[in-house]
Image 1 (cartoon, rainbow, N blue to C red):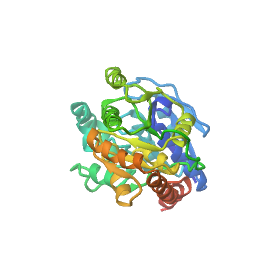
Image 2 (tube, one colour; image 1 turned 45 degrees about the horizontal axis):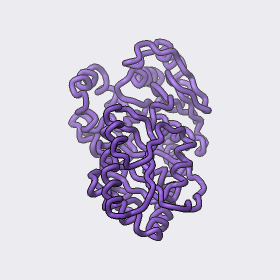
Image 3 (cartoon, rainbow, N blue to C red; image 1 turned 90 degrees about the vertical axis):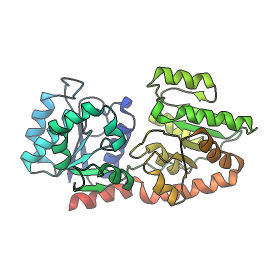
Image 4 (cartoon, rainbow, N blue to C red; image 1 turned 180 degrees about the vertical axis):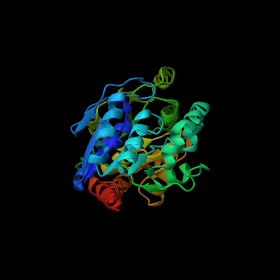
Length: 352
C-alpha cells in the first residue's frame, strides 16, 4: 500500500506541522504502508519529491501540479496537508482525475478560532476553492474536540471525517536528574503560546520559596513578545533547538508545561512529555487536553498565571506524585499514541 503526503513544506521552521507529518509517515511504515512526500521546501529520510516553488505566498508550483497529475494514480491514497495553499488543491485535482481517495489533514486550520484570524482573507479563499476542497475530501482530525469544533461550521456539518491522533516515538525512560527539578516549556515565543503567563506563574512560585530551575526552548516568532519574556527573567531561554536536543531536554526535565493561550488542534509537546514518562501540565486550549485530563494522565489547566502556578505547585512539592503521574502518562501514550498504534489505525482506515 502506497500513500502520498502532499505538503507545502517540511522544513524545520514549520515546527509541529513537520513533526506531525513525519511522525505519521514513520507510523505508517511500521504498519507496512509505504509513505512518500511531495513538498516545496525541506528534506527527510523518507522518499521525497521536491519541486521548485513559484509564488511563495500561495505555495504555487507548476512542476508539483504537473507531477501530481501524472503520478497520482500510482498511489492507493493521497493525504493533503494545509488547507489554504495550492499544494492541497493540486492534490485534490489529481486525486479526482485518478480516482484515488483524498484525505485532508486540516491541522487545526478549520477551527473557528483559526478561521477568525485574517477572517476576510480566508473567507475569500473559502469561496475560491477551500470549501470545495474540504467538502470533497475525507477530513482528518487529531482529536474528538478538534473534529467537533471544526465541524461546527455550517457548511461542514455533514462532511466525512475521521480522527487519528498524532503519533509519538517512545523513548527509553531516563533516570530522574539530580539537583533542583527542571520545569520545561517547549514552545514558540508568540503571544498565542502562553510563555509570558507561564513565566509570571514561575515568579509567583519563587516568591513562595519553591526551588526549581525553569528552561524554555523555542523560536522567537514575535520579537517584542520575546523581549517581554526575557525581561521577566523567570526562565533560562535557550532559543531554537533541534528535535534531538528537544528530546534530551524532555529527558532531563521533572515536568513539561504546555501553557498555550490560543486554541491548538493537538499539542505534540504534551504527548512527547507523556511518552518520556514526564508529568505534564497542559492548557485546555490544546484540544487533546480535556480527554487526557479525563483519563487522569495530564493535569489540565486554564492558561492564566494563577492556574498554571497552582498546577505546577502540586508537582513541585511532591516528587512521588510526579513519578506516579509520569508512569501513568507513559502507559497511556504507549497504548494510544505510539507509532504502532497510530500506524495500525491508518492501515484499518485505508483498507476500507
